[in-house]
Image (cartoon, rainbow, N blue to C red; front, side):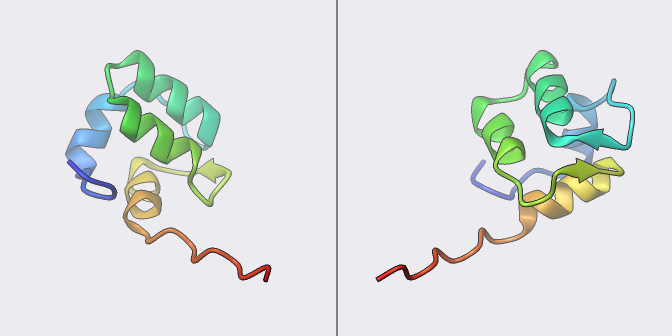
Length: 73
C-alpha cells in the first residue's frame, strides 16, 4: 500500500486501543504496538495535525496530499 491508501477499517485494527482525542505520537505508538507497518507509523508521525479526535480523522490526514515544499530560493 502506498501513501494515503489505508482504509478506516485497516486503521481501526491498528488503532483499536487508542483513546481519542490522542496526540499523533500516541496514535503512532499504538499503531506500531498493534503491528502497523513502519510506513504507516511514519505517515502518522509526519501528519500535519498534532491531535486526532477519531480514527476517521487519522484516515483523512493520511489521505491528504503532503504540503508542497516551500521555495526558499
